[in-house]
Amino acid sequence: MNTKSGRILLASATSLIAFAYAGAAHAQAFYLQEQSVRGQGRAFSGEAADTGVDSLWWNPASIADLQGGEASVRASFIRPRGDVVDNGTVIVRPGRPAAPVGGDPRAQNPINNGILPSGAVAYGFGKVAVGLAVTAPYSFTTDYDADSWARYSADKTKLRTFDIQPSVAVAVTDWLRVGAAANIEHVDASLGNYLPNLSPLLPDGHQNLKGKGWDVGWSAGVQIHEGPVTLGFAYKSAIKHKLDGTVTIEGLQGPLAGQNAVINAKAQFSTPWQAIAGVRAQLSPKLTFNGQIVRMGWSEFDTIDIGAPLNTAIPENYRNTWTWAMGLDYDVTPQWTVRTGFQRGQTPTQNGNRDARVPDSNRWNFSAGTSYAMSKAFTIDAAASYITFKDASIDRITAAYAGTPAQTPVITNGTLENASALVFSLGARMAF
Image 1 (cartoon, one colour):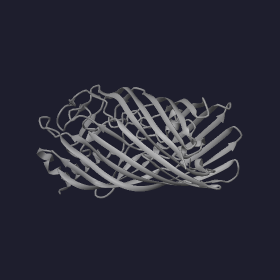
Image 2 (tube, one colour; image 1 turned 30 degrees about the vertical axis):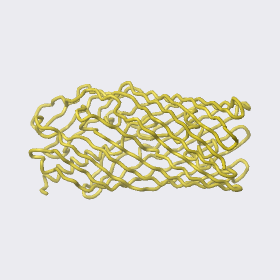
Image 3 (cartoon, one colour; image 1 turned 180 degrees about the horizontal axis):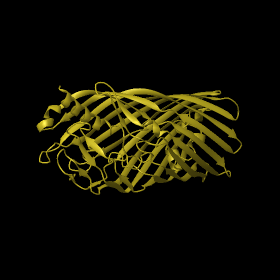
């Protein structure tokens, strides 16, 4: 491969990987928080301070002082809606004036519906308990049409993470509980976007990335139980993911035809850390107040580092964010509990750096839920949430074949409009 063609191949491949691990979800960016139906019912407002396996994802200390076994299984149906709209995006091919990018100017509902399963199990004996949670905290699927105005930024994307969290917790005293866990995560990514040929008369080329990898992080937490008030504090580490995979480039014509290839690629990126503080206060024998604040270290997702043979880094420039929530639990009867709550979340994406693969924005989450104990050993949980997103600009300037004579900037000018999501969840908790 000559130097010029190598530079073009490098530029086209890294322009794909730059979008590799982003997407719009409904918690923050591509983080999914639906790891507890009980928690969803109160908008995830007290999970670090609650007890039992449903809070294991947020705080491994939640299972301390458990006597015997407890298991939880649940599934959430996620229905996102929204429009990604072109407001005058242009493409600048070499030696040509800026021209409209063309294509359908409105992409409706590019984020696919999804079902998110999760579960946990724990067993306690004396002052020690061990547990295991299986979740999918960073996952999404997007699907833009081949003629969408956003096709050079995003086509079809799938990201799945599977987190296996073995945990151990100890009741140190009557009021102090501590816990620690490992977070073993598997990532499976598949995503693509279209590439412009140098002549507007030619059909677009295409590129696709596939990659997988296993990596490990950790969690730790404490709970303080004092009378009617419980405080919970937890930390979940960032996880540096290393993926091995391939980039497939096809459909390029003319001077770019020599770049059609399948190449091996390595990528490295980090998911954010979380610092979580929660409180539960029993206001009366039947009514409990819940509150929670989460600081998410999204600045860990500052670059995507690509190793041999590409050896480059792509800036992402995510910012750290806050999420806060409040909610109530009310025991209608000893068997029946109802819940409600609301949550405010910031987006880690920033103006000037937001693209069509990440049509994310600040949001409000309004939730309600219920639990019914069918027996002392079996409880059914149900919850529903409505999430509304603020309209936001999509304005990240990109370039195909950046840094080469074939560099083709795409000056993006779009908006996310009318975005919302509905989440319906059902779960069961069992004691044994």
